[in-house]
Amino acid sequence: VDCARAFNNYGWHGGLPSQAFEYIKYNGGLDTEEAYPYTAVDEECKFSAENVGVQIKDAVNITLGAENELKDAVALVRPVSVAFQVVKDFRFYEGGVFTSTTCGNTPQDVNHAVLAVGYGVENGVPYWLVKNSWGTKWGLNGYFKMEMGKNMCGIATCASYPVIVA
Image (cartoon, rainbow, N blue to C red; front, side, top):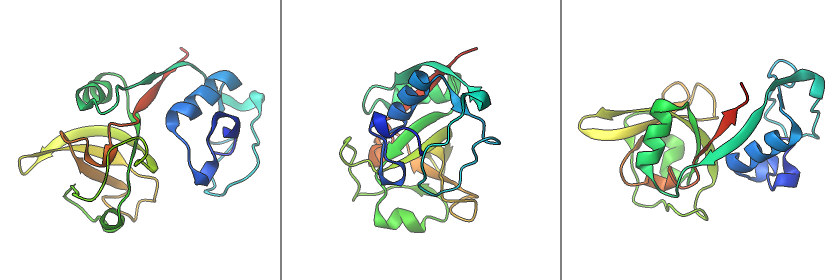
């Protein structure tokens, strides 16, 4: 969060996971959580090459709005970074499959990056299982279900994942 400003990421003020992946690739890696813990505070970059825990060789961007590609990536590759538009009613999510008629799904609409970790069906409604960053007291122990198949709130608009150096 602190280190990718040169890649148009501005900590708490916005950015995209794909740009963060480009920073990690260019930078030669990312420090371990132990060496550089997340503090939820905008600070100066404290990266140390001595503490690199992972390196990436590339980033894959899912085709804009292509939920079928996103589903394949979540199933076959790994969890996938996604962004979506947070709307007022989402803030009060407590369970079930979230759907909305007020959110947009363009790149200009998305405003919050999260992690798609799975998918399923609840009461006949397909959904994405997504890990949020608002702590475990929010939603379903920090997760939520977003309706699948409509690019709801732009969930498949800015999706990407890193290719890790083995």
